[in-house]
Length: 106
Image 1 (cartoon, one colour):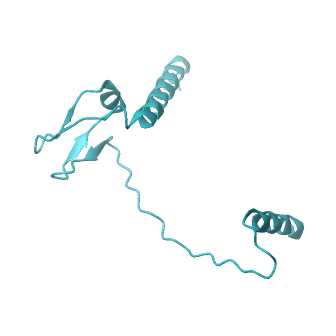
Image 2 (cartoon, rainbow, N blue to C red; image 1 turned 90 degrees about the vertical axis):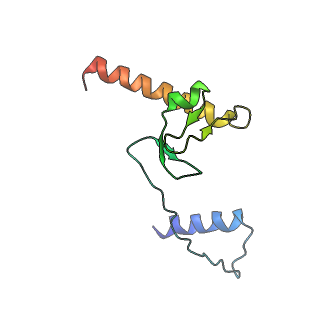
């Protein structure tokens, strides 16, 4: 077991150019809070009301409107290209999983 730890330590030290005499201080960072909602959506930036949004809504390119204050949100396709591609892949995967689930009655 010690040899694995020594190997990892040498790899880490080589990676960051640390010699044996140097010490590395690891500063613990707090774990960020992530809120996981059962209902997909986002909080309105104006009134904080929960706006229900699906992947299909985001991919459609149509404006999303806050039901509370009426703010209209649109996706900037150019700036969000990578995120939209990822959402498209996610949706394709979800569709395939749903199809497999229904075919196999899982």
